[in-house]
Image: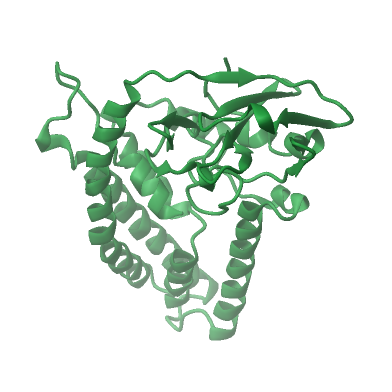
Length: 317
């Protein structure tokens, strides 16, 4: 999860006359993002350590191990629920998703990268539901001391910087290549199929290796699907949004040179990942049927994804 967010914030901005990124600024977004992370982790560690001190009456004994264990179990349950939501197995559990307030998300997404958006996203990274980070947060809480809590989270964040900074820097070169590929225009097909018997359907024989984008109106919110014939010849279907980058307005995919590219983080996928791969930075899975030469999906199921498309800003025609 944090890998996809890291890559999405480390794409450099073209700001010279030739539309290229100066070499001395290629690593700048990654530095901003990781600086925000380190600050966020340390401040949260300080606050949790202070909370632990208050809970123990300032005796310096820390949180009892039994309570720490209970907190870890609760955190683990939330991680399991998140995993199930990514797999799309239980619709009811989507109500338990933890999301930032929409107003705050929209405000950050509207910021241009030159306005230090990666730094602000890095600050929010400390609030992300992540197993290893939550374990460290419980350790900071259990220390019962603000300084010890901040130090624990600081060391944890610094330990992750080399890997995050390295991948972020490598991603900038991929982003440059992706932007060059994007200049090549492709024929794009959009369809809005009618609802019949509570389902929408796509004729599998009409699909090619170029994705077809299927629009569905869910009470005023446009939900878009990707329908494509994979490189293995199998008709495939998924939601046109990235599981990790959502709810960014640019969390959607475009076809470039026979591959799907996330317009937010720049990650590239083959068409065989559509409708098959779940979890991580992939096209979001939705349950569908492939029978009698048609791909069908329930509109009741589609409606449950309206929140994921509330701030979505992809092309619809």
